[in-house]
Image (tube, helix red, strand yellow):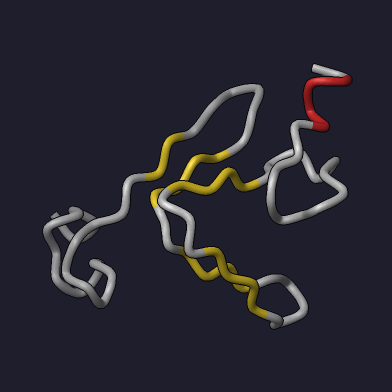
Length: 73
C-alpha cells in the first residue's frame, strides 16, 4: 500500500513511524519530538515525548492545545 506506515518514502527520517491519535472533541496527540510548520511558513518545535496539537483553533498557544476546546465542547 502506498500510504502504509512501513513505506520508507512515508516514514520519518529516523525510520520509525510516529503515532498520531485523533479525538473527536479534543486535540490531536502526536508522539514527539515534533516540528510543526505553520501556514505562514514558520516552524515551531517541541521535544516532549507527546504533544497535543489544537484542532479547534481556540487555543491561545496555537498550534499547541491549551484545553480551550473544553469551554465550548
